[in-house]
Length: 324
Image 1 (cartoon, rainbow, N blue to C red):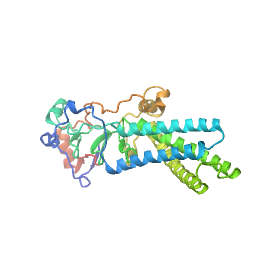
Image 2 (image 1 turned 135 degrees about the horizontal axis):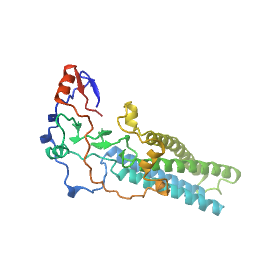
Image 3 (image 1 turned 90 degrees about the vertical axis):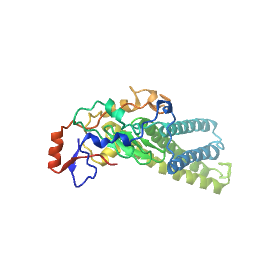
Image 4 (image 1 turned 45 degrees about the vertical axis):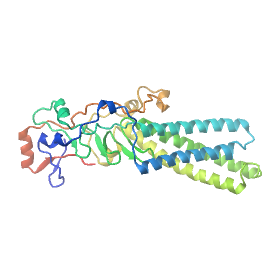
């Protein structure tokens, strides 16, 4: 339970009546469950399309500018296979991160029936999100883009057009890792290709004209360097968040943990599923693009009696409803 000065917060919830279940829209019926998760955000969709186009551009330059004209058949086959495999895994991870429900709390579940099913004790206080009219579990935060409360929300990433949360963090980590790997691989191949072209005739080291070849390679080098730095940083921060069991939002807010932390290797097992195996690196493991059936949200607050509430009000402090 979080306590703060009454002057700092406008939404003071004094009794269980603040839930106002009659104003909430009932949650979707079970017939509508199982639909594919997709965020209809113009900026996010544009960023996702740009991501795929940049990967295809890199693949185009690697294959048609550097590998196909190469006289070393073994070099071309090995590097072409490796690059395309990593690129395929990167796009598959992006696809999973974008279309997997990140852990959305059932919308509009603050209904009279659901509240009665929680069997709240007299004086017990639970959090309700005023934006999506949901009973808010612990560590859940409201995303203004997804318009839902997301369990263990780390951040909303426009590049995957989705929030990074409890259910899709693994795929986001794999996406950043594979993009970093293909960026590093592309930089290495560009370096070798420049050396090869300087030693040989530029007209023989590429099927394109020398000026076009140079421009394509410079653009690929810039793209690969930029994404290598960006995705490496994101990969590191995500692994750190998993190992410390602290989301990006919780770290920014300097939120004191009220939960039992799962640190280090155990945190990695929880995020990636089970003991270390090749499935950790497989974006197709547990392949299911449909939203999982919602589980009842547990109350995220402590039990308080009416006397304790009155005592807090008398001391000009209030029970804080978190704002995102």
